[in-house]
Image (cartoon, rainbow, N blue to C red; front, side, top):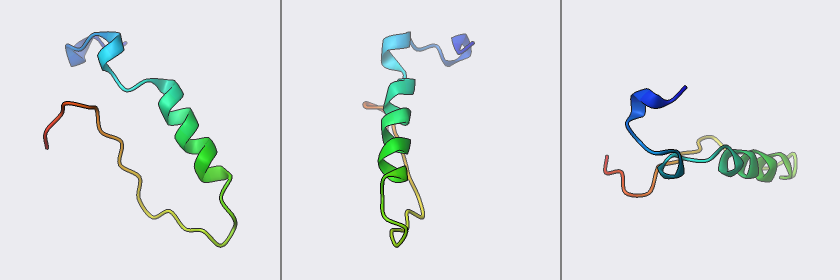
Amino acid sequence: MTEWTGLAGEEQIQPEDIVALVRTVLSLSPMARVPNIVVERLGDSY
C-alpha cells in the first residue's frame, strides 16, 4: 500500500507510534488543548 514512498517498512513512521500519540492526547484533561501535532520521520529534512 505504501510502495510509492520508496521507503522500507522499518523506515516509515509506524502505526504504533501514532496510536501511542493518540492515546496520550486522549488521556489529557478536558482543559488541555492540543492545537497541532507534527510527526516527522527521523532523517527527513523539511
